[in-house]
Length: 308
Image (cartoon, rainbow, N blue to C red):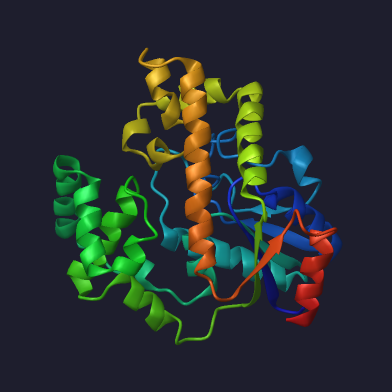
């Protein structure tokens, strides 16, 4: 498996962390996180960061690499994560990319260079002003007419990516989908195996999500959310869109009971899992492993590695 990497993707709460750590121990591996929120320092419980105990001595990369007050782009992720992969390979380690942020994974393994395009701040500012005054849904509808394939992957609250896709089109005349397809004509950066974890029974996943939220509350999520939401940088940060924190704003504002906010968090997490699965199902190269149908998902993945 020289110079090969493994991708373990899937929806939130599907069991990526535990399985990838066990695989890393068996394969002399190191883990490179592909989670757009775990890159931020201090967002621990709400992003389900693995603790040092959970890591079991396996080296993890791309966690806690950015202050929460700062923006962290896909291009930054690709640059840093590529360095981590190359470094691990140079030391004879097996890189395992683990996470649920499909955009990070795609840009890391393919030669998608649109993240590096020069920024047209005038266009971006106008689109941002329109989003603030007209609403994200208007811009998403506009993107739907321009690039329906990419727009279908975005949630209406994902203002940053909606604006970015429109900015690219109005700057280059090309859609995000066209640029992605162009990049696929080049060979991938790495030889990889793409694995997506899922359950054949969706109720199992939703039950795990609900249980995870309950555990997070026991671990102190409410205090973490209060600290983050009360920070001066919160409203202008990516963290304000993160599932796990914004749901508690109505509670802190005296508008909703805590139990209502917890249920809202569970609902948003389930909805997010649906969007993640929609993204990964579009991947022709993905190998789905149904963990509730397998006696040993780890062995299944190792066999896939041997045969690919």
